[in-house]
Every structure is written in structure tokens, then in C-alpha cells.
Length: 467
Image (cartoon, rainbow, N blue to C red; front, side):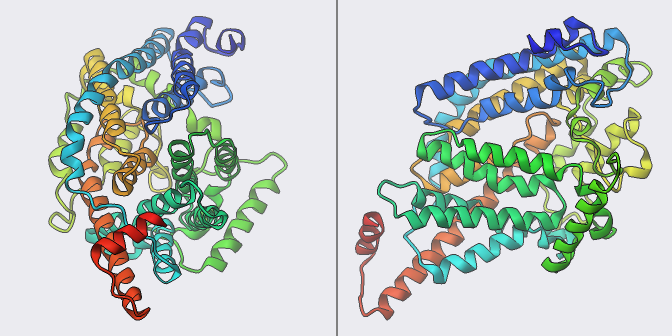
């Protein structure tokens, strides 16, 4: 009804067709929450909500979102493609679920068992490492090792461990306070990066863990996350202009960063009519990927020919560590920058400051037309089913992998964003869980000896289980 009666430069049937991801998302979320079981992470529901946010909602706010002028045919085809992508993704999801259930026993063999309970002497250094990763300080490392270190230093195992303790039956109240403090600290550390996503991600992880462990929808976390995005999006450009160097790295001085954020808010809100810098843009315009999708349909196959999978060849080198291939191009250069420059969606002068999105629909259609649209949607649907069905909610390491995939999910973006770093993420986070588990076991054994008690391995496990 909203899409039909709120008028703008789009035709009524174009707005109506673009509402399909929203209607589908409401149905899926209703089915997921109505049972109250919450036996899996809501990958499919979250993905469809993203599709609506970036592709469906812009049809309602198209003029305010600075939508591009395109032909009527191109916009109609774009709206239809959005609906087709959503439908194919949902239909392909059960196949992924079946594949994931078959693969789960194999994946579980490589994961460590649940760790013992640890005290402050272990937890604080662990949290410190997570803060370093959340603040993007690994950006000062050489490019060849930066990605590997960021994966190993990830805070996903930390937040999962803290949430499983906080939401356990009869858990002390202070454990929930510990979870809240850890989440807020990691979120504040993300401010140093100047990236809204890095600020919101800890909130998203804790919210997802809340759903599957508490069996409730985290309304407060949802409101807090939405408010954070709305507050930071128009201001972050001012912060980046003063804080980033030519390599998009930031200062390690937290006090200086706080001062720069204060100056950024003052610069933005002191304007009689606040303007947006080249690296931020309005929230609505940043969410509007319906425009580039329509531009892709308007310009393909003429005057811009089909790509025929040229950019997808990056998958061949994606798994090669940068230490072995220092000159390997970044995904942003291969996909986002190339797409935006080819279709005239972004001037070359702003490429170093910010990068517009490369929508999944545009990726599929630019490569192989309508067949490509169906193909990329089917692959994503299968992948979402695999992600959801391979997670065991009673396993710390398995749940950590699940929330990592959940937090990194950007369903609206190009295909190789979902496949390119998948193997590295699974291997890296699994290794990070083993390292954390070994450190906790070692520290538990040392503290037990210092306390004058020589525990056997079975006694340590029983004690951890009781706690």
C-alpha cells in the first residue's frame, strides 16, 4: 500500500513491483518469529531485508535518494529483476539447507570443543586484541599479512564466548553486564576506522546471538543499531577527510579521534542546511542501489556490452594469500571501482574517498543478461541455506563461524563478495578458535596448579560444565 500510494517520479507499477522483497521479508520474518523456536540464525530473513532496504525502499524515496533519470523500460526491468532475484533466492534456499546438513558433521570435525570458563587474567588481553582488530589498527601492518592478522585477531570468538555465558540458564547478572560492556567497547573502537559498518557490526553480532540464545527478538539492539547508522552516516565523511591518510589508515590516538569526531559533528550540524561531502552522501542516496541497477539495464548490452564473466575470473586468485602475490588487485578495484567508472556512476576524483556499491542484480545482468540474474540469485540462496544449516547453537566454535558469516553478509552486493574470501574466513576463524581454546585451557591448568590443585583433564571439563 505504501509503495502504491506514495507518488514520486517512478510509475505506480514500478513502485509496486519493487515492493516484492519487502512483502517477502515480512512473510519470512513473521514465520521465523511466530514459532518462537529460533533454532537457526536468520540468514534468509536478514538477506531479504537487505534486498528490500537497498532495492525496494528506494522506489518509495527515489527522488529524495537522488535517483538517476533512466528510461521507463530500464526501470521496469530493474524492478522485475529485483523481484526475480528475491524469488529465486528463496526457492534455492532449501537446497542449500540440505547441503549444509550433510556437510555439518565434516565441518564439526575441524572445530575445537567448548572452552572452559576463564577469569579476568585471560579475558582482558583477549578483549584488548579484539579492540585492536575492531579499531582497524591492523591497517598499519604490511599489506601482505594484513588480512591474515585481521582474521586471526577477530572478536567473533570473544563475543560468542561472552554471550553463551551471559545467556546460559542461571547465569549471574554480571555476565550480561560483561557482554554489554564488551559490545559497547568494540563498537566505540570501530569509530576510529571512520566506517559506519565497523561501528554497527558488534551490535549486529550481539543481536544475532541474543536471538538464538535468548529466543527473543532484541528490539533494543535493533533500535540502537538503526540510530547509530542514522547518526554517523552523514557525518563520517568529515571525519575521514581529517583522519585518513592516503592509505585510508587512521591515528592510534583515541583522544585525537574523539576530537575529530566532535569537529565532524560540529561541521555538519553548523551548516544552515547540512551538506554531504563526497565521501559520505545522504543516507537515502547511499542506500539507493535501484538507480545503478536501472542504469545497468539501460546501458547493457548497448552501449556497454556484456562482461561474460571477466571480473568473475578474480575467483581464481582470490584464495591466493597476498604474501605470495603482493600485486594482487583488491576486490574494490576489480568490482566496485570498475563497475562505477564503466557505467558513469561515480567520478574518478572520488574513487579514493569512497566507493559506491555494485549490486548483485547488476553483476548478474552485466555478465550474462537475465540468465546471470537468475544464476547469482540461486548461488546466494544456496549459500544462505548452507550457512544456516551448518551452525550448531550448542557449539562455541560452530556458532562463532555462524555469526561471522552473518555479520559479514551483504546480500545486495556482487557475487564474488560472497565467495572470494569464504575459504579464508572459515580457515582463519577456525584457527582463531583453536588458538583461543588452547590459551584458555593452558591458563586454566596453570591457575589450577598455582592454586594447589592438580586437576585431571576430565575434572577440568566437568568443572567447566558445572560452571
